[in-house]
Image 1 (tube, rainbow, N blue to C red):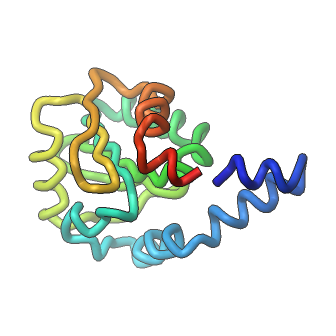
Image 2 (image 1 turned 135 degrees about the vertical axis):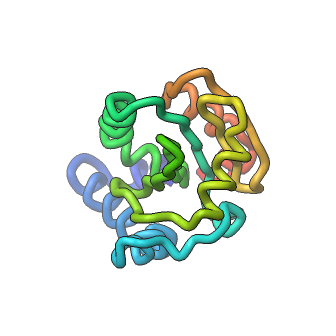
Length: 158
């Protein structure tokens, strides 16, 4: 999608068009509307199937979570373009990061879904179809992006 926009527009115009597409897309609005109340209506990861790719990360400490947040913020447009929602498990709590912000308290069923999917891995990638695509020892977003960009469904999105 971004490549198509870049071929039509250039410079500041391209950035403005890209931001408006990402910020005002129906998918982004749906997730953000859930966060406006400070809680999530999401009760299962399966509800995101065919809409988003999921990245589930196990964070060992607040410092590690802060590093992750910094990296997510620096690559926000790339995450949104790849339809990627990030779940961070820390101290038996799960936070969902989407479109540059966290969604509030998640249902216990989501916490259990995340724990089951994560199992003994540090980070896992779940595709649009809901299937596990890759696991990682740490969080290297460039590696995650490379894996996503190599997926057949992602190639058709462009």
